[in-house]
Length: 405
Image (cartoon, rainbow, N blue to C red; front, side, top):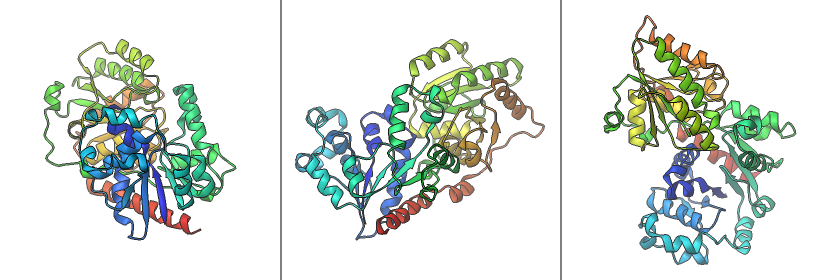
């Protein structure tokens, strides 16, 4: 078995932390576990089709990680940069290397030889290069197809990108979807697709990053008190429905006697300028905190001490944030019309995200409950149900099955 894994999102996030999305975190967590399940006679390569600079960043990531069996791809040009001297330097100190590599792609001869020797190509995000499609089978990880099913929430470029990704599926390929919700969307959008080739392999919470002893100054720096804020964590983009959440929170403030704050964590995403203008117009007081992007330790402390994790997304393919909040013992309040209802079935409360008044009513209902809300230790239950080890094993078994058939 020889597998090439397209992992360009890692390279994007390596160069610019603001470009590190949930997909990046998913790939990183899976790679560590996949690496542990591979045998000595199974070969996996990490690949970026963007350019040799992105490939260099992937090679650098492998060098600095504990991954042993997944190998970097190196051609003659990259060979001169394949050393500790380059891999231990900060990205900011590699401007000359970047200038040389970012305009160069792998040669067609190199890719053709690689494809001929490859049994399987796995893409998490990008359409598969034609050279691999001709030579080997393909597995696509599908996180969602919302730019196609909810096109008004995305710009045309994003919709076109997703359309090319999804429509590049072939009849012998497998779509590995992160939830049954997403799998059903793929089946509906591509009714001609062989339904036996649509699988569900759940994502998981980032277990390794959760510490019982996380201590940062993030609450103090943001002027927060434990249990006295609602938390939203997501990329700032239209489908996340932040304006409705803010309107609902403003309504809550008028009726609540407790006066908790609303904290919005995340960097900008699609159509961000218009979305930012809407949010700025709605934010009228210090009760709404725009925290921007925070590091992992700060995020996990915010998750741990929030009163409620609030996700009012119009569409969601899995919902990592809600699951990670539940793992910290915080109650997730999530949209019923998304995959979060499926994923959070045992750990959260659902709401109608299309109606702002429904959001504010839920916040007040939770706050005014005759039984005070207590933190719930869901860590072990979630670990058993949503495990990166389990997901990685399913991928490795799928690799073997597809390579042998």
